[in-house]
Length: 162
Ligand code: ZN
Image 1 (cartoon, rainbow, N blue to C red):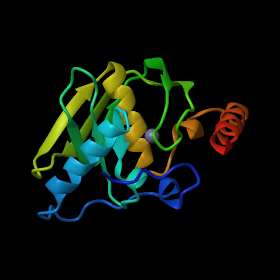
Image 2: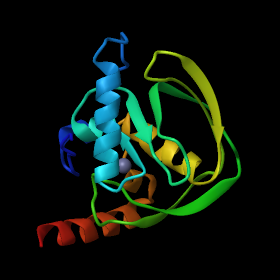
Image 3: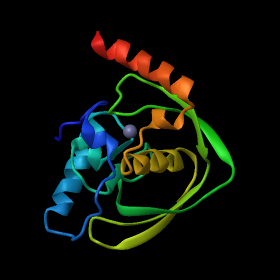
Image 4: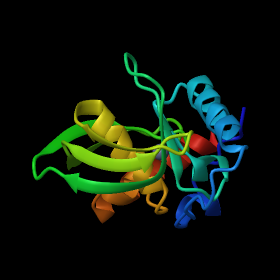
């Protein structure tokens, strides 16, 4: 089980580094990411959230297999958007509605170093976009307009102090 860092940690605010080589430690790291996500009751987790400077994230939606995305690239997003209430393991207790593209096409590598392309919609698209943002140091609250972001952050900081 890995430690999840929360808002304010520098690892959450910088662009992560691409994985250069599929070393033998990668499958074990991916397993640890899955375990940490599941124990945290999350449906996605990105490496910067466990203070690892790598472009890697995992997803685990109900009814879907566990998925890992290594060195992902968003290939396309739909002009249609969808609204969901989002949360984040690095901002525990904060949930806010956010609009993002409804469909995403992503290219990445799996834990065996095999490339794949996936087109996702619904909640999986949402999680992919949220986790991919983490790799660029972007949090979901950063996608809100400035006044909504300030309100959400104030609410989070109030709660996290209790
Ligand atoms: Zn998150």
